[in-house]
Amino acid sequence: MEKLMSVVVVLGVVAVVLLQCTTAQTVHVVGDNIGWTIPQGGAQAYQTWAASKQFVVGDILTFNFTTNEHDVLNVTKESYDACSTANPIGNAIKTGPANVTLEAAGSHYYICTVGRHCLAGQKLAITVSSSPGATPPSTNTPTTPTTPTPTSTTPADCSPSPTSSPDKVEGPSTMAAPPPPTSSSFGVFASFFVSLMSIAIAFLF
Image 1 (cartoon, one colour):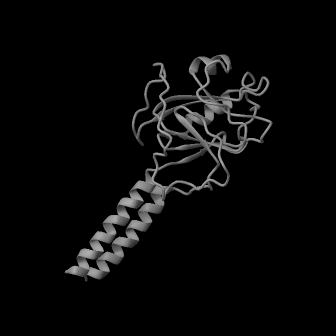
Image 2 (cartoon, helix red, strand yellow):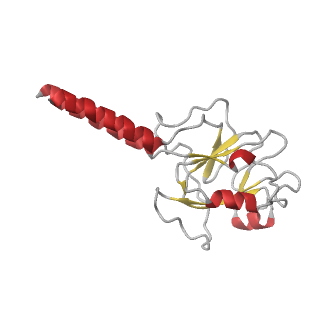
Image 3 (cartoon, helix red, strand yellow):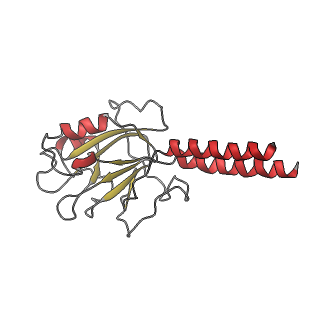
């Protein structure tokens, strides 16, 4: 009976850790293979890309760009619409590639402040949900940026390890060095959990 209890406890701990890892984050490479640049199709390229994604609190946006050619600035909707740096949320990230951890639900706006890049379409608007499957807040309602705590909302064992000292942005997003590409967390969890259950059942019989 002791052996059975230890197996159940170990499986419970492993399941909890894996569940936290599966809900921790998804890494979205902004623009996929076009990266963070002046898109040939104008702003529609990033609008189309964002429409095909679901963004959840804890997810990471990776802005792939060359340092000194582009940057990323989190701004208000008004600044996004006008391609203005008048109402920044934090500081521009000038070192690429850059990661932004989505720490609050609602609408998030990003622009490139170099030259006329934003006016040429290098800007991104996304809507972030509080949890997977949740309906994102209406984009018609203005949101007031909140200042999050400087700590990450993801478990330490699940978060990517930075490869260099990251630039930081204050506000609802945190910039960091890009993590390695990740696989589907849910698929990994499901296959690992099935394997563990098979081992547990073998111990019981």
